[in-house]
Image (tube, rainbow, N blue to C red; front, side, top):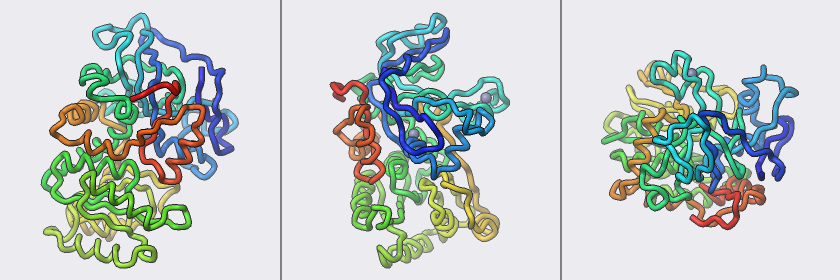
Length: 392
Ligand SMILES: [Zn+2]
Ligand SMILES: [Zn+2]
């Protein structure tokens, strides 16, 4: 079958192959024919592995950290598709051949302390398909039946078409983060106006945030000009953001000052809830400066390397701030909440998210074109399709 593989952790890029063996189907597994898959920041990090030390360490975590012992995997973890085969012990009350599904790609062990106390999303032995195990940039992917999210239960393709079904994993990160922030009636600042930041803006608006700020740092040398970011901000406003600020003082004079002025004038002397979704070093100090005393900073972004400067005394201790890391999606509370919000038209979530989905899909074989468009900020959510005839 076709597949997109990471062959070596010593060089950048991915390999498109047509001779990958179809994935085996264990007794409790479900085999899915992939309809569409979405490119995310994690995939970009895997692509650019030589400059992503953290990602490389993570990919080696289950084989002793030894690069020479790395076993190539099929990448990709955001997808939807159709069930084509069930393992012999799969309960057909859960899922049947022909069902339109997606899957939680974090595979929890089921026996560690976290798994047994309702925290499977931070399982000690977690394995992620598309990072540690074969993923979904392929014709077929197999997953444990207990990880399948059966979209037929939420209205099927009519209600959750593949252009949404293909990135529920990513949207779930945003939903998880915003729900942890308990944002109803609060002021929220989202740091990072990439796919995660934009989705979080839409979710925070849906969940009743009072005021939503969003920031990013334009980087003209990195091909992300102030004008380009201003265009992103226009999308952010359509998704629910009230105020948008470019924190690059040289490229966008005055905006950072205005942001801090506004935040200081909020009732608590700062923002109630900060959602850090950029992983950019400068953003952590912005988070600490913007948050009100007693506020919360939720961390979803992953820094490319350990931070050199974050003033814990000033920004966490003296302010009595709560810092919390967010990983994956709660299994499966996040999924139910997300799909119910999407399936109910009046929440407005689906209509908002339409604005970040690239309508033109890219055949899996042309993956370079897709990765390039996401990397250069021309597209936010772009879908790769194994079968080029696929329409949403
Ligand atoms: Zn992802
Ligand atoms: Zn576990």
